[in-house]
Image 1 (tube, rainbow, N blue to C red):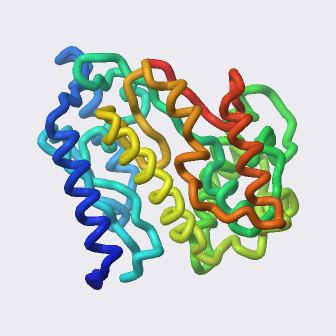
Image 2: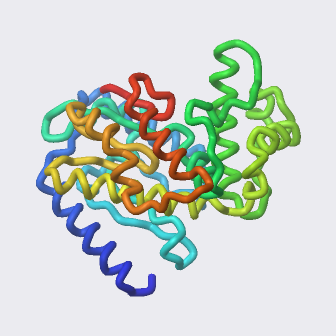
Length: 288
């Protein structure tokens, strides 16, 4: 990666954060039996991935507590997410057992973040209450839940696919009760204003944006002496600080955002108000 003022600044910030979290106890409050279940789950998940996709993890290595940022294609405005720590390899259903300094935690993830960033990037205002993975399908609650998961998988894949070749498996399409072309048409119809960006690899640009979001949040909380742990597109924090996270989200992440006439700033301000509401549809809060 080329050296510049930006890389020097980012390296200092990352070193500072890693030194900060090394003074705190990030632990997993589980029994030996549960540990065996976790390892089994990790191994089963690893076997489902192609060998070139990601290095399989066969155990939890608790010594992996220092983050690193991974950029893409030799450019500092692509990728940039935080990786390399043990809690990121932990299957999501076991994250409720993570503790920070012996205290219970809560996990926050921002619903449909990539799509919302893309709409904002294009200067398009969109209803913050809208579920962007809802394509208007109908059926049983189980079908709709399974369908939403598959639609989420498909949309996030085509955001990162720069050749336009991604397909769900035949089994997944059967579950969805749609052909590939029907699914593609629905997604393009429901997201017509940004459909021209699908299959262009725009996802790694969006990853850079959400990595900046993550860094600003992590650094602000670090300066307050509070640990905020990143998990790609979500965060883990002691449950006592949940209201603080929701309150400062937009003002902290976008303090120097211009206020254009195209509605982006108004959208962000509306989003901030939504975040402050009880049961916000944009923020998923998983109390542990």
